[in-house]
Every structure is written in structure tokens, then in C-alpha cells.
Length: 191
Image 1: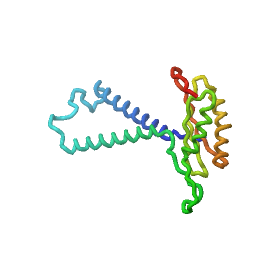
Image 2: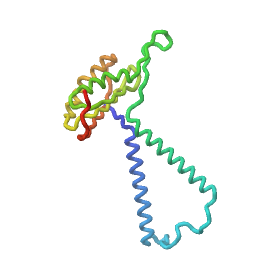
Image 3: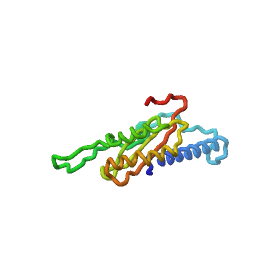
């Protein structure tokens, strides 16, 4: 099984770095206010004088805010894309008049149908990525709260994945499987 939660490590590192930075700045501010830092006067003004800053400071602050905002939007967009994008696979030569185009979403649809037919499954989403001769299956399954996850995993890897391998005529299909438990209060989906 392979990992698809690529942003998780970066998220943890950035959150840890931000937390450490905030703790250091907060500790410095508290120590300065309590007079524990000999080089800081706790009663001095934060900035000297009351004159407006130069215009380049305001421009730099706006540019920094824009860069930070765009970085935050990029981070949010990466969070939403948990599964790889659908691809098109070309069977045969692209140059000849006899080639077939298969959308990876179309190839993954029978896997979703198989998995959603299993007991204890509320829903499933599947994506195939990689080249057509070496596809990778990314599967997110939402199960009932009382479902046996180990048995569900065995059934997926023992039934749905072998059927996909046969259909795609490949020896190995690496699988990343994310099992989620559904909320108890929500009604089960209609079959």
C-alpha cells in the first residue's frame, strides 16, 4: 500500500514551526513585560515617534500580505485534492488511426460499484493514476461505524483489486486505501 496524503508531512512541519515560533515570540514578550530582559525597557514605547512610516514600508507590508494570502490559498487547494486527478490512457499508438482512449475514472467505476456493494459500506471513491501499463489505485471508503474494517480491507484487496487487475491486464496494482467511519446520526444510504 502506498501513501497518498502527500501534504500531511508538510502540514505537520509548518504547524510545528509556526507553534514553536509563536511560543518563542510569546515567551519573549512576556519576559520583556516582566522586566526579565535587561536590554528591554518594559515601559518604553513599542515604536519610537508618532510619524507615519515611509511609503515603502506600507508597500512591503501589502506585498507580504499578498504573498502570505496566496500561500494560504495554495495550501487550502492542496488540502482539497486528496485524490489524484483523472487521466486518459491511450491504448495502441497515438499516430495510427486505431487507438483507444480510456478515462481512468471509467476504469475505476467498477471498483466503486464492487466496494459499495459490500456490507457495511456507505460510499466509496476510487481514482486510478499513473500510466496505463502501471496503474495505481487510490481508494477512499466510508464505512458504517460498526463495520469490521479488517474484514472490509481483506474483501477489497481479495475481491475488488484482483478483478481490476484482470480487467486492466496488469500483474500488480499498488493500492492506497483510506477507510473512514461514517457518523452514527446520519442515515444509511439507499442501495
